[in-house]
Length: 303
Image 1 (cartoon, helix red, strand yellow):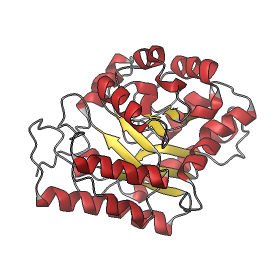
Image 2 (cartoon, rainbow, N blue to C red; image 1 turned 90 degrees about the vertical axis):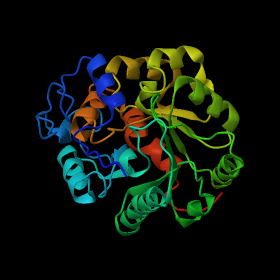
Image 3 (spheres, rainbow, N blue to C red; image 1 turned 90 degrees about the horizontal axis):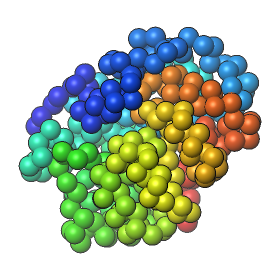
């Protein structure tokens, strides 16, 4: 099993970082964020919420196997930024060998995935305002969805192994997702993004991360009309303020979620960009908290 560490990160994420004009480095090199990820602008009283509103980071990776991103580390970064909770996904490196397009699954990788997802479920059960997502791969284990996950992570980049969309188990898995109304965070190629959203057809929420930056690009998706769908959302992770503003101007604040994509983005720096939009308090609250809580259904009740 390949065990490349987080220092290598995702080639796709790194290339996109550089294309956005950010110097290399885990903090993205953004102005106002030091190398530890601490926002040098006081995080408590900057922007529309005056430091008194609950903030949830809707996009963070957490794991302890092939990368070292334990909950304790994440809680430190959240605390620095004044963020109280997060949606957690397993690192890709714990799900499949992303560096081998011809990757063949086996029992070792299946066990690694199981441990990675279960770790997040255990964290969710003992921590307030932590929401575990199930990172799905081609075994499409629908029975896992009954264990309390609050969403599904569906992720691959262009040069990585492909999902088997024609496998009958894929449809069975999706039907269970629809039944439970679990949000799907969908990070895929442009074509697969559009095809899967058409296939889902509004039956469960879909969140496109990075405002589409790794799903074919923001402008391609913006002009495709994909966000016209009532149940299609976006998160802000690693996106530019211009992209956020364009999205908000067209679709309003009900469809946008704050996220950092830790460790590729730092919570304090990514939140700072949202604050700098200077949104009205009600809109800011939707973006940083209300929208994601509505989607993950914190009561845990099935629909």
